[in-house]
Length: 158
Image: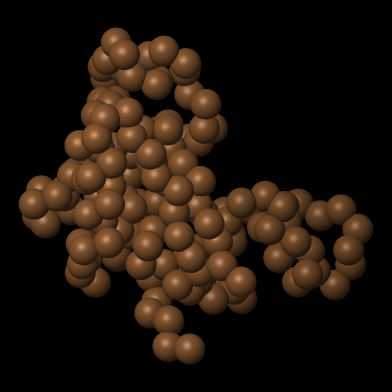
């Protein structure tokens, strides 16, 4: 079983063409249709900054880095790409040839980690409680670490 990723660039957001302090340029999806893929924009702009950094080091675009990062994940079978312009499509296709370093993976994994989402943090905490009746919940206790092993960024050896 694998994952087929739809909208790997979050509707163009991860292409690097958007800036935290500037409205989307006229003629872009975000300017024309708004944010159609829901995500945390503050976290998203942190991811874009990391993509730009890696892209500059690899001589690639942020979009190419984002797609290469996805394709390197062992659970990802493929991604569905699209582009408004032929040069976008060609750039996206070149992601299969981009090899990221361990440092690139560490940066991108760290900056894109959303933490332990609800309800997982609640389930983890309640699993540790002797009495399952309502208790004070502390999601921050499960933001990093815990009993779950994070397999992102590991190489598949199976």
